[in-house]
Image (cartoon, rainbow, N blue to C red):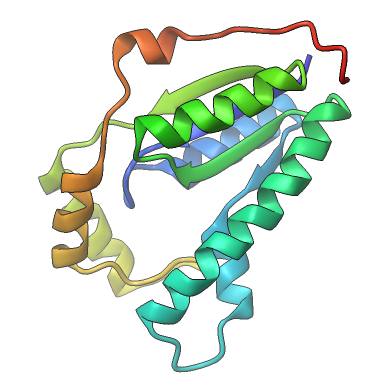
Amino acid sequence: MATLYLICGLPGSGKTTLAKQIEQDHAALRFAPDEWIMRLLPEGWDSAELDRLRTPVESIQWDTALRALKLGISVVLEWGFWSHEERAHYRELAYQVGARVETLYLEVPLEELWARLKRRNANLPPGTFVVSKAELEFWWTLLEPPSPEELALERQWTSTTV
């Protein structure tokens, strides 16, 4: 049975490292919006353009991910999933096509996130962007960590649409 892996965490928490490990261990299709956006941006991009591209890129990734789940292929989404509502939405869509869902939360203290991001900012790997301390602190206020009950959710539906 296909599994949708929702990787939840802020920048610098280790989402990409975990997603790549799941991709290898479970022969899953991995989607990382920043990697796609980086390929679309011209030199001299700004954060407004980065933000503008995120929704259409994630929409295309989701359409492809949903098709993969229907075909029995596991999928890793390393989108951050900062809100309960967003996680519940994608969890429900995956259930509707008969997939399992695992939410994996990377809980890292703010000070550690900033230390990691400072190191990353100094030598950006491909597919990543500079993150400022102000951005990180703002995003920290937006994060709705999953509860232990949410992390324990694993439901599978028998779907007649598969």
